[in-house]
Length: 337
Ligand SMILES: Cc1ncc(COP(=O)(O)O)c(C=O)c1O
Image (cartoon, rainbow, N blue to C red; front, top):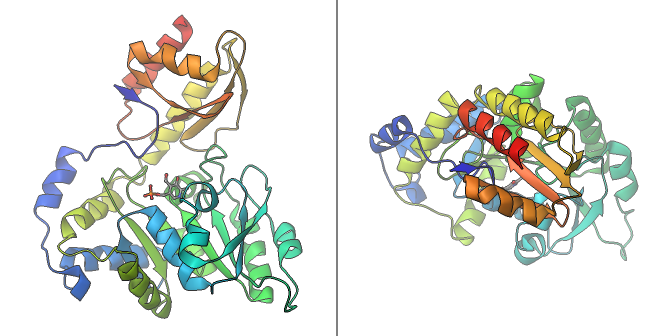
């Protein structure tokens, strides 16, 4: 099976499983799981941040961050394509009682001027703007990457306007591998960062929320309220340690595969606009002989699976369970259609 639906479909490798089975365990609600404690320290150190919190999912880390940075009735600023707004079940309103001010950025990336213009003045009758949330890379925009210089300008607006700055970094490592920006530079800039271990890094489960000590203390309380306090979860934290130690640099291979596939797609008569391929995600328009749904169906007999992301667009996502041979096979099948 060549599964291009998502980078969340990866299975833990034999080596990762072996590492998981050896993990020392304890009760993490009592902060006594040595493996979770190690992972949390490791991730915080990696970004030069004070602390981090292990959670089951990226949705939970984002939602905890939004809850911890805001008060009910506040407003957060994010791009209209962002995961926190579109794909987290309305959690911004449900969990935090916060509303979203949506900005149409450049392929999911909003800029400092747009944010400055969207911050509400301090009148009783206007919603209080308290948080800006960025996503890097931007999933719905085809894995686009923020320039660190642009993020620094956003940070200046946030500092002047007294806004917190959160990053949904579900695929931050894809951005870092591509740009060579340092994790420390990100740690210095954001008040909180969510990273996912279960996307390109190949762990079966797990995300981390990073921030300063007082923020993580608050976040830990919300994790409990959200039902995310886990017990002997060191098994899964071990997968995260393995992923951070072994699976970051190899993301470059997924990016090369994405470029290789996109080059083939650009030659096909039934493929229209392909969003610029910056990391491991390709979003392309289908036209002419096929609709997007028909093309998905035409690929299935060849054991190739993908999702539509709109009526006319398909998404291919490259990841560590897609080998070079699978990429070649996909290219051969696409030429046959
Ligand atoms: C950009 C982004 N943020 C957050 C998430 C949520 O992660 P999870 O599926 O672990 O809740 C995803 C999931 O695909 C994502 O793509």
